[in-house]
Picture 1 (tube, rainbow, N blue to C red):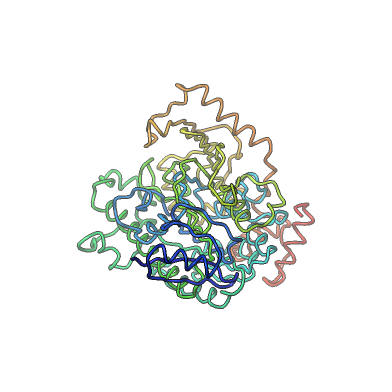
Picture 2: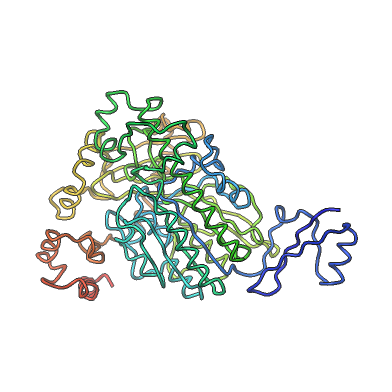
Length: 542
């Protein structure tokens, strides 16, 4: 005798659980007589993918600046993510997922449009934005009957029009606060799910930790160390802005200030793990997890001196673009791990397929990660080159191609360590000078300042540039980028992009935009949205 849980759908809005304690033979007879349905041998859920309709709820959880290799389910030795590891074991986990940028705005726009930054005329640079002519994931799911909601603790995303695609949205932070607002985000999400649990919903949650400044509560820090380090360095003001000096002092792996920096990063991952655990437990109490598709991912990773710098949005090495991705829907997706390289642009077509909705009306760069075989969803991602881009004119302008075991890096702009430090010390000035055209911006497809090729299987740390030693591979990946360039549209100028995000327009920038004819003088913020659309239409962008 044993306890056996049998799951079935009583009707689309309700899931019941039957617990029967009986001999196996008698249990089978009882079920056959009572329901006349098939019986599967226990335990079946880990081995068989079952499909019985589209998910009622789709929840996409993105954790900002999260490296895949700092989660236990991706092999990390420090226990940062016990709950996510548990969920990942019940999921389809993609071992080699690459984001399309190491800059949050570029990456999230690509995620929601399934377009590489250069494939979207609005998609690149400091002021990357959604394309008014290409519906994003939220609009497509909204058209498919899902009530859509967007909740974020990352203030940067307020600079885009992405949230306007959702039927409701809320930003829970105006700055990168030292106090985590993740518990508030979880509470807001559960409030929404409680109100809408009987409807079809799509909810996007953007948790900002472990993004800088790495300030976890002491109780999370002490999970990994007996006491809190007394003299921590600020990740931005001290480390990024003075890294050259710190390196001369011995800052790096093994040095106590460096190890404290990474420990604080890991402690914030643990904090987010608890926040997501509470989200799941709350959804379970609402009785909706059995009909929920849960997607977990990150927008980019984080650098810790692997290639000479820190933080993110400076390069496209794997520490910056290798991100976690797994799909949890145990009743329809059999758990497993997938080694084929995939990209965040693949998420949109995958969700549309799993939701039973038509493909996006525009040409996308992504491909579905799942296929139906014999009535079940199975993971069959296509082998393809993957492109990532960082087009922020203040920083490095660089592209990467992942092709099998090879990583190719091509940068029309590649700053030295000293130049990166100088930019970091004067970020606001650099941004304004770049927008005004005072600080020259490189052509995004201009001559290369840096070029490298690495075999990641033979050289996982990407230390040996084999560009000259492998001319046939070099020519192949260059051909991939050249073909990509041929199909890319012309990018919308930054002054036009910024017109769509008036909350970041300072007085000086406003005067500049008025002088250039992008904005009318003396218009109020309420008038700006209509004015912007009129301006953009006159410039031929609609």
